[in-house]
Amino acid sequence: MNNNDEDLLLVNGQIIASSLFLITIGISIVLLYNQKLILENKEPILTEQEALDIALFIKVLATILLAFFLYTSVKEYERNKNTKKEEDSFIQVIASSLVLIAAIITLFVIVKNYNSRSNNLDISIDNPEI
Image (tube, rainbow, N blue to C red):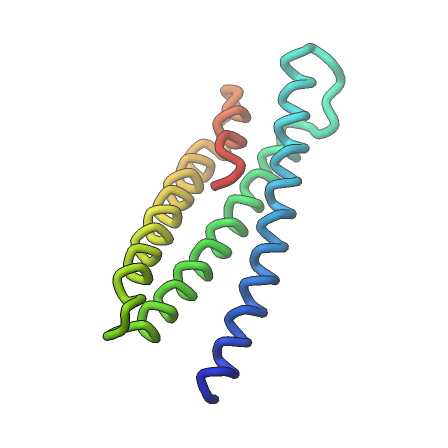
């Protein structure tokens, strides 16, 4: 596979991953709205368990997507070694790594509190963009 084919494959992957990431943000908005209904003592859209299950699923999906974005950053860095773009590509790898670490931490919090029944729903849906 030549560089152009590999670039095209990575760009197509980024389009798909970005689209899926937007869907996870949309689902997070629904979870936040559900939490708002609960706080207003109104009938929620989802049960607590459904909301927790969905929150766990989207955090896992977001973590996988962010790992893919890190992978593409590393590939870009490797391609730009010994060029003027090397430093910028390296900074992008660092940024992608930090975002992935943040996602792993939020996923850990959800998994840690998943079976707890002490109203940890708000913990599960904080930071929907991560």
